[in-house]
Length: 203
Image 1 (cartoon, rainbow, N blue to C red):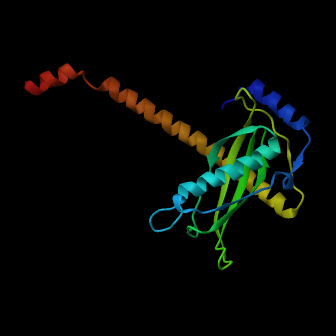
Image 2: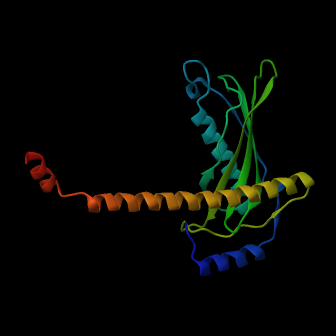
Image 3: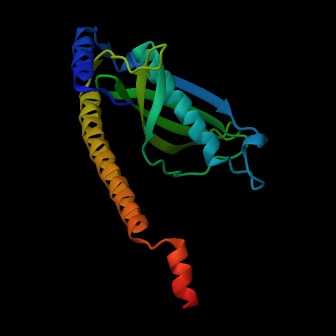
């Protein structure tokens, strides 16, 4: 989703005209019991199943803030610090940590509980980025995010730095892709036709 400069300027103005909303207003908590259909033969829950839940929790926090549909555009690396087993109760807490003009970053924490022993383990923390869209699928402005505590201010500043890094990484990836395309085109242009290679081989 790429906006031209005029559209980006308009979106910024619309964003600034929207009333701000607090971090607390975006908070979402989801809980799900881990059934055997989500696990491998060893009883460990598939990482993909947890990633799906993380994405759903983050998306709900973003939707609660924007009051619109959202699409996922990025997920930072997610490390599994502890395994999650069949029979665990998994709880996901999500909240927004940063918003731009149309994009929002959500922080999602995953905790697994053994309901028989009461033991809790924080298994994952992930940061995801969503873009609010209208019914036509076009990006639309979102309300500013209001930090109420020192911790929320610190999280917002850290999120801003992550967003700067993401933009720089996208630019590097784009430049790398363009360089590969240029190199491949040059190789195709310089390669002799198949017929010439065949004649050279027979000679």
